[in-house]
Structures are given as C-alpha cells and as structure tokens.
Length: 152
Image 1: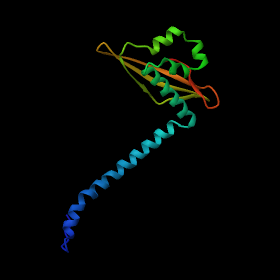
Image 2 (image 1 turned 45 degrees about the vertical axis):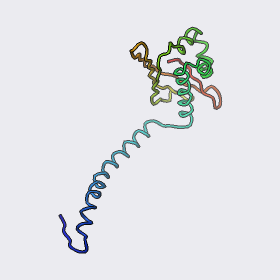
Image 3 (image 1 turned 90 degrees about the vertical axis):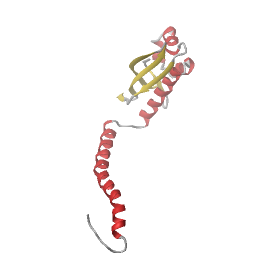
Image 4 (image 1 turned 180 degrees about the horizontal axis):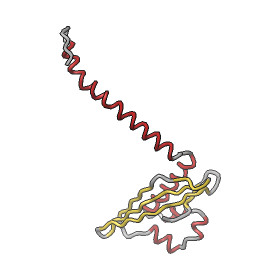
C-alpha cells in the first residue's frame, strides 16, 4: 500500500480505495454490456411499423386475457374473420373463471406490413397450468391500421 503522511492523506486514500477498485472493475463489464446491447439492437430493426404491430398484438392478447370477445373481434383482420367460425372465436375468448396470462416475444418482419410474433398463452384451471405456444401474424389493414391475421 502507498503510504503518505501529510495531513491525513493516507486516511483519505484508504477510504477512497474501495470506490476506485469498484470503478476499475466496472469499466470492462460496462464495455461488454454495451457491445451486447448494440448487437441485439442491430439484429432486430425496430421501426414505427414494428411498434404499431406489436401494440395491436398486445391489445388482442389482452382482450383474450380479459375474455373481451368484442374488443378481440375488432382487432381481427377481415381475412381472419372469414376463416374463423363463430364457435372458434367464442371458444378462444371464453373461459370458466380461470386465470390467464400471455407472453409475446420479439417479432420479425415477414414482409412489408406483416409481422410475426411468437406467443405463449397460459391458463390456470382446476389447480393446473395449461400452456400453449403459438404465434400471431399482424398485418397492415390500412394506412395506419393494423390487425391480427391469425388466432394463436
């Protein structure tokens, strides 16, 4: 240890030493963390369309979680409505009091105006958890409108 004897410098240096070591150890970790963040950012290009599609996917899954058939129906594309029977929609949104939760993961752009998001649907029913993993396709339905094109 460096030892100086002038007006309490040794005492000040000893109290400052742990903070100095901590800062030195953080610098390499911070550099690695920022590199990882840049890599993740570069892999997934996030733009306004992606955020809009993700927001619609979240609203649709929230309607499922809340058993809000009407709100969910409003978020479906015309094509999805044509290919889905009323019984399938009622079955998808209905439930017998079970707790529901969902997970929507990072999506990917399939084509202009089309994004696919992996989803996980969880239901707590009769003392057991039911999980289903699938995906939803969110498409541009108008200039600034987006709609869910597939049920998970």
